[in-house]
Length: 148
View 1 (spheres, rainbow, N blue to C red):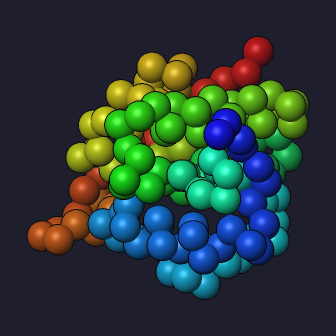
View 2 (cartoon, rainbow, N blue to C red):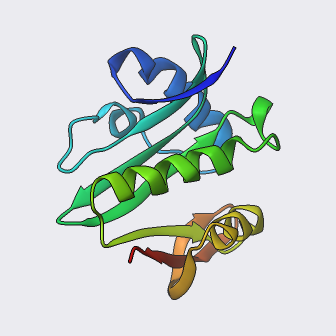
């Protein structure tokens, strides 16, 4: 079967919610996952057949696109699917005529930081003590990608 990136729809939400709970130490709420019609929403899933392998949630506000959430099912991590999702995110931004793309990543998530950096994102700032951890807080690294 081939991999496909599709716009997220209501039929995907149960699988997305399961992945969200498995993939993140501090997952979004089920309500947030199911809010697919928020302002500027452009959410997508990576599917193989009927199986969702991963997803991203993004928001496009006046040419500035923010990657709000991204995850790959832990059973499929390490196979390049995160890179495919970021590729799709960047392509989507280009097709929307975006001027810039933004994201933030936990400072402890070195794999994600390295992936984003390898895809052309640059660290521009930090939100100190932003994310909760099991024993305190950690910084959010803010990264941007500028389209020319």
